[in-house]
Image 1: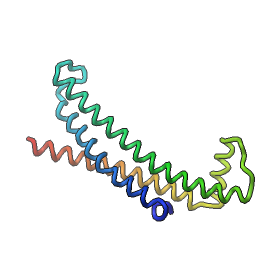
Image 2 (image 1 turned 90 degrees about the horizontal axis):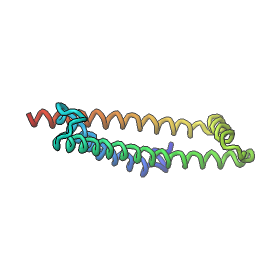
Image 3 (image 1 turned 45 degrees about the horizontal axis):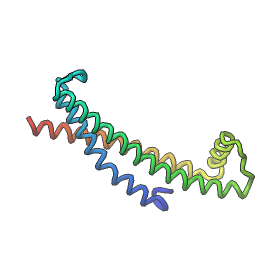
Length: 150
């Protein structure tokens, strides 16, 4: 499995990037709650600063989450596709039709290398669980901070 062998470094990098995601999502939630009485159409200085700060924190969180997940999945897919193509090239030629090639490679992987498919599924589950953990920890941190402020 990729996470336990060649992908250990990529997996640990992915896990290291979870902490900044929690921080930025917590800051965005704190800003959202702090300026809740203000509407998004509040054109006062406090409204503009609060809303823009919240949007900046949400943006940084979204971009960092996307970047971390995509880098991890990119390395995983590159590794698994290379293994599948190595096996497939030995048994049949490469088709130039990319859609047909993708589906034929997918079915080939299920038949000849199911561990690749399982590895991708496990990685997707790990990513989903980590995103859920980021949101839970961020909400917990934001509520703890806001309770301490009052």
